[in-house]
Image (cartoon, rainbow, N blue to C red; front, side, top):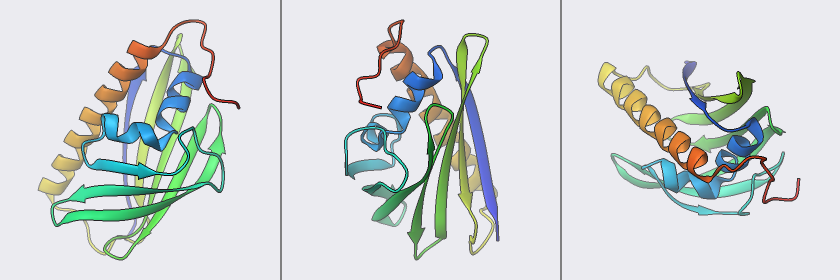
Length: 154
């Protein structure tokens, strides 16, 4: 059963700055409470690159192995992990320049989710997403200095 959840926020920084931060999975534990450890390149990842994440769920710690399936800096980035408990998980980020800032959108998709989440699970997902987006906004805006120069070779 297809499941999609989408959240967005405006960040006072150019799309390149937001992209470079969130598309480097090593940043994830800074803004996402469930993400505990990342193994892989410490840079914004490109199409085909992989990384490993330790993720905390109610049942305990699980390992996710992600592959970048879309990358077009600074507008879109996506990665996919196959799981035995929920089927594939796809995370897709989009970055749109609007009025001198970036609309950052995070979309979570489970194309083959075995069942619909409960109302409680949806509320928890939404709360965690809003906290994560707020953390990204705060961290990117704190680090951004105009004009933006990427610390990574593009």
